[in-house]
Image (cartoon, rainbow, N blue to C red; front, top):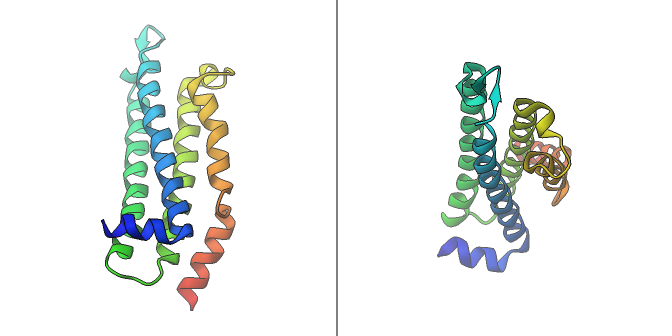
Amino acid sequence: MQLASALLQEAPIRDFMRECMLKGVLEVRKQARLIDELGALQFGKPLADFQITQARIAEMATAIDAAALLVYRAAWTRDRGAARVTREAAMAKLVATETAQQVIDGAVQLLGARGVVAGAPVERLYREIRALRIYEGTSEIQKLVIAGQVLS
């Protein structure tokens, strides 16, 4: 409840959380479609049966969880009564959006030509994630915000 009331009161926090939730929705959609597409055959085997594919998926899942933990930490810090969560929010946005870009890029790599066909789920997400990396400050701006907070 504390976070919900804070989100209603502070536009930067509300916008940050909206972006993170949007990223989460995109990620869930991507994962569901990626699992379906991994059933496609490569050299007579489902793509998901290859160890390199499994390793890439493990890396993606780990990176997504790490990014989510930063988002949760920013919310937790705010709930604990911190007056500002600028550093935590900037770190969470930076890592969440960069991770989303890397995960979607990895999905495109795994799917090969099917990953770049116009209208394919992964191709569309590849284009959509770029906007998330720009809204509310580019990754470079987030780095400057973080550095400013750490050095102050």
